[in-house]
Amino acid sequence: MTDGLPNPQRLFAFLTIAIALTMAVLDGAIVNVALPSIGQDLAITPAQTIWVVNAYQLAVTISLLPLASIGDSVGYKKCYWTGLAVFTVASFACANAHSLLFLSLARVVQGFGAAGVMSVNIALVRFIFPRAQLGIGVGYTALVVAVSSAAGPSVASAILSVGHWQWLFLVNVPLGLAALVIAARALPVTPASGNRFDVLSALLNAITFGALIAGLNALSDEGHGERGAILIAIAAVFGVIFVQRERRLTIPMLPVDLLRLPVFALSVVTSIGSFAAQSMAYVALPFFFEQDLGRSETATGLLMTPWPLMTALTAPIAGKLSDQIPPERLGSIGLTILAIGLILIATMGAEPSSVDIGWRLAICGLGFGIFQSPNNKILIGSAPRERSGGASGIQSTARLLGQSMGAVTVAVVFGVVRGHQTVIITSIAALLALIAAGASGLRKTAVR
Image (cartoon, rainbow, N blue to C red; front, side):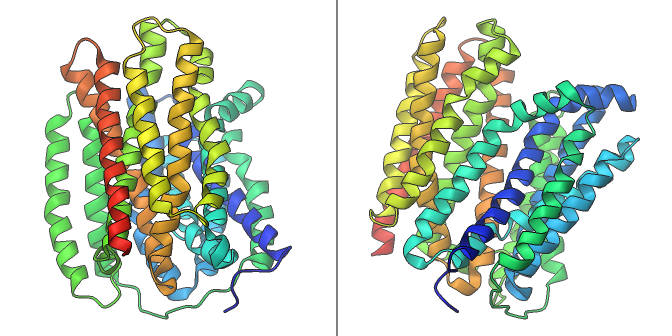
């Protein structure tokens, strides 16, 4: 294969990646804003509306690694294009749902489609950009994710101000159709291993990660701790069986072969720790702003903006630098800056001004942006090109696990601590960031 795509094909190929990834990330965020409207329109309780979110999250989680395996087998373009088509059709179904059951089922299908996109997007970037510019490609991808995450609540609010909640899903249809046309012409055809799909591995994967994420979500709900513990225990048992089976396979669905590479394993640990730290701050700070400082929802959204905005500005620059500076060094620097920002948040006092909050969150965003692109470059670059799908799938899985673990930690602190909750949570997050920085630094030795 040639080393990357020529322009303008490279531009159009990345454009379809950006469109599909934006839709997948936005869809995970914007629906939260619409839950009250959905509940009222479908005549369901607030507790029932959570299934609209959980159905999507669980579908994505349990299908990332199987779809990454399919991508390795049939080619990343086919997996990506099919996932995007499924996501687009399911979005139309969501927009026409008139019951909780139909909407939840459509969200499950939509989650499978999103997983088809997310499981191989970094793998495709590896074939779109030349090897010498992989950091740039990964940086642009991080930019798309950061901007989409930051824009989610604002986009949802804007759509809901002029239309019904169904429009949150309907807007995906024309965007998806456009991306499908571009993808068919511009995405590179990648090598296909032709390996047979392992149904048993897919089943063990679904039980392990499905039970784990469901258990973590249950732990974060007051009064459901026992159920959460049971689900996590089930995940642990099946996880052991899953790992033991995968170790015997030549090309496993769970990339234990890649996890034996110290640099890859350290990159996964670094990713989980960093996203857990970020998630803890993202979940806890809105409560502090609204309940302790008395800020409105709109003001809270604005106060949270400096973090993702700075990440979006920094990620492409860090990606480009990672092609010239050892990426493990950039990762350690970024995570150390993130830890410093979290410590500054923990020590900002009980009544900080908007400026006091803003510059501290900007430091956090700066650190996370410096870290994210180099880390993803190491993670995908340390795997053989024919195993890019497995590396891409584990990268997305590590992000989801980190975010879920961070949210659970916040819920536990809220449940057992009565005062200084934000200080405790951001201090724990800073410690996690420092541990992740240490793991990132160890990759220098692993590479040698």
